[in-house]
Image 1: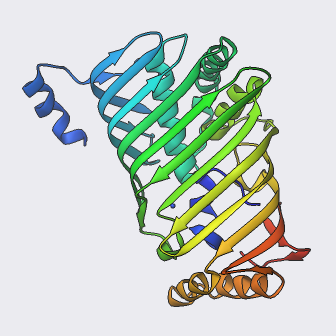
Image 2: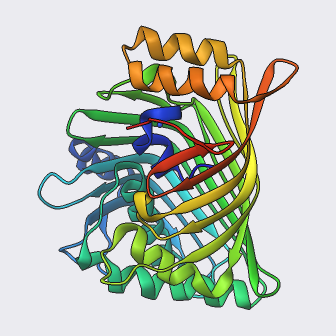
Length: 313
């Protein structure tokens, strides 16, 4: 099965390719100065938000913007909320926004590593104390060069009552432009998975940071689904996450409903390699109603389906 993160949905375009100017005016209307998150290293990102309401166990922001240095990408959101931490929730919320942007565009910056690991430790401590973490963003817009991604909602819920943390990640109302095969990118996605709670901080640091040694976080994927129109990709299995897409690996069961439409979309977008790979995958699949199923393996950037490597690059 493919790498479950949204990073994989967008970077692996092979299967299912996912404002600052008004802040001062809005602040004047509300009598609130735009807040600059001081804890974020300047070399990592610049973060602004308004109407901050935060404490040890919660944070709520409006009009969030995250900008990476040197035109490295930007994110804006109408609102963000976080509940369940035992530390400074506002800083953890900022780290989460940096991670969301980095995961969507494949950004890594060594200046983020130490800070993200520290905020990840706060999240780990919160889980160890029996808390459940809940993050949500609304009206998200991401820009990186020609790539534009928008989402109506994004959310992550994590709880851990033991050595493993259980998580649900979801995205809805996804629209993309400025990249090849936009018709193949899902409009919604959700994943339910578990991972060792004490490896969360190192995974956060690797996702947006740049470590000399990548972690190997072993994840059990209970369910994964991505949908667009009549096409649905779903599956379950196991994955080893490192923070970098091509060095991650996964295996498990994969199912696509209405693969014929997916092939047509690839052909219409002149994605001949993807179309050919999907045709080959359909040939070696098991048929179940209007769905095709496979045992799959993802390693070294290569997807193998029922023992057949597919030419996705």
